[in-house]
Structure formats: structure tokens, C-alpha cells
Length: 447
Image 1 (cartoon, rainbow, N blue to C red):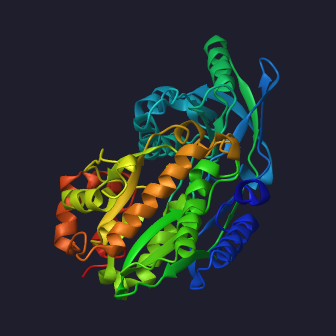
Image 2 (cartoon, helix red, strand yellow):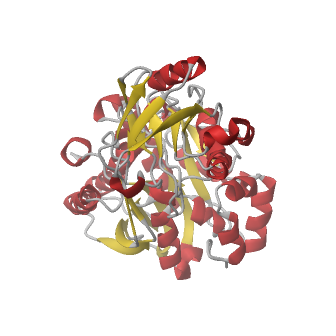
């Protein structure tokens, strides 16, 4: 229903609004009457259009492109025609070597094919330096070679945090970029590019919250979350429809079984994740006064791959409560935990607020090959593993909510800052432009 009936659902779109209403209806149909939405503001909007590109010299052929979210449209709503220059790997040195040829040109950046999660993170890590160099070189636009095989395209956010890059930029099909690069070695290449995206101001978005009140300690909350929004080329199956549906299914299962845990279990479907985790940031700020009552936060955000364990986000003290919670279902054991701290999904502002938080550490297939891509559709979901993940997540949530003791203490701001340095998460935050918000106190709720 979510993938085929609603489809791709960027936050701010009509499809996302329909998805929010659908989730509310599904929770209530499952018997969770305590279901509501919470409104928040996203500082800036971006909507893609019918992107088009073609090589017009020395040969004529169409080029498959898709605009990068939060990049500028081509000027004055018109197509841009300019010479193409090969900017190599997109490093500052590569742009400098182009010299005067770069000014007013369309720069082509070549990328290695993505094979691992490290490759994906490297792609994000490259962007800041690459676009700063492109702006200094005064190029007219940037085409970045797709890291996916053949002609597969995907939405790669090139501006984050609500800020748009003041330069048109797009992903270009891998095989087409390779052809353009070869032609550029032989002589002059000219390209026509039309990226009719639209950039707008602040707008309202909604998270969905549902809860099953605890029987003894209703004031204490175990939260399990997933993001409901997706990009629009596919139908958001792996990222992150399968886990959105999982939350509804866990709630339904609790209701069917008639079980009520000791603590409150809260299910949250965040929006705004793809734009920069705006929905989860808003939730933390809106619930600042009760952050101390959130005893644990669990995030599922990497599709339907088998859950191997959990990212502990620098909290080694979370290993034992996870093992205890899952001891009742040894057939679903997930003991391969990692102390690594993760930036880029909805646990982040809970981490900054000292709340014990976990991210499911899942096998990367089928999530990674289809990440943000046209191919992220219902058919790629591993239904068997999705059911296993739902069972494991339900057991974990139940165990943490039923345990007589809290799983771990909430950290103070000083302890969080030490964790950020110890795990080198601070370096990621600086690279993604988040560190200033942490230092100023704009992000993270301290106790």
C-alpha cells in the first residue's frame, strides 16, 4: 500500500502527506487509539522537475541526468548550453588544473562505482570540498557521475540542513559520463542541460506518534523509530518503507496478543529525515521536558537486510541490556554489535541529548544497491528477513520496556561531548556543518 499506492514521498510533497494520513489510519486500525501527528517547520523546500540533458557536439545523444536535491535550477528557468570540462575526481586540485577553461563551463566529475557502505559515506564526504572548488572555479554547472552501474540514477543530496547550493548540479548516468569523459580527451565537447527544480521557503511537515501506555511506569518511554519520507525516483521500499511498516506491525502484534509492557512504548514515524533529520530534531525539541523519561531510542533505517547486531553509538554499557532483552528469542540472536557512532539517521539528536540510543546494524543488501535510486521498489525487499527483523525488534522493545531497571543512564552534556570526541563523531559533524549547532546549544537537549 505504501510503495505502490503512495510511492516516493519527499517531505513537503502531497505523497508524503498521504503517507502520514495512511500511517495514522493503520495504527488506529491496529488498535492503537493513542495516535497523533506533530507539526514542525522545515526551513527550506526543494522540488525536482523534468530534468533533461544532451550532448550536442561532437556527437548528438541524450544524457540521463537527475538533479541533486538542494541545488539551484539552471538559470532563468531555461536550458544551459556550455562546453564540458573534465574535472576528474572533483578534488580542489582537479578544478585548479582546469584554469580558465572552467569558467562558464559544465564540469564533469568522475566517481568510482559504489561497492561498500564506506564508498557511500565517502561520496557524502567529498561534496563539501568539491562544490567549494566548483564555485571558486566559476563553473556554470556540475555533472557528477553516478556511482551505480549502467544508467541507474539516484537522488544524492548535495545541500543539507535546508541550505541550497547556488549552482546547478546533477547526477549523470555512469555509462553516459564515461562516454563524455572519453570524448573530452579527443576534443571539445558541448552539452545542453535543463534542470527545472524549484527552491522555496519554510514549510510545515508532520511526524506520526503512536504509543502503548505502560502498566506500571507509563512516564518512562522506550521509543522505536523509522523515517517515513523517501526520495521520489523509486517508491521508498528499502529506504525506509519496510521499517515504517514494521513499526505498525509491532504495535499490531502487541495489541493482538493483549500484552502491556511495564513502560510506555512509543512508535514514531519521522519525516524530514532525507532533508537533514529535521523530523527527529523537531521531536527532541518538542519533547525536551521529557527527554529524561526516554530510557532508550531504537532506529531501523537500512532496509530489509538481516539484523546482525546494533550500533551502540559509543555506549558499551548498552550491550548487556540488549543481550538480556533478546535472550528470550535465541533463534533471533543479533550479537554482532559495534561501538561505532553514526551520524545520518534519526537517532542523532537523541544521542546529542544523552539518551541511550541504538541503530539496527543490518546487512547492506538489498539496501545499499538501491539507496535513493529508481530501483528502490517493493520487489527488492527481502520479505523473509523483514519478518525476522520485526520479530527481533518486537522482542528488543518488549525486553527494554519490561526490564525492572533502565538499560543505561542518560549522559550529561559534558559526557556527550567526550563521546563525540572519543568516537570521532565530531569530525563527521564538522564535515556536515552540524558542529556549530551543537556548540551553540541549538542541537541537543542537555539535562
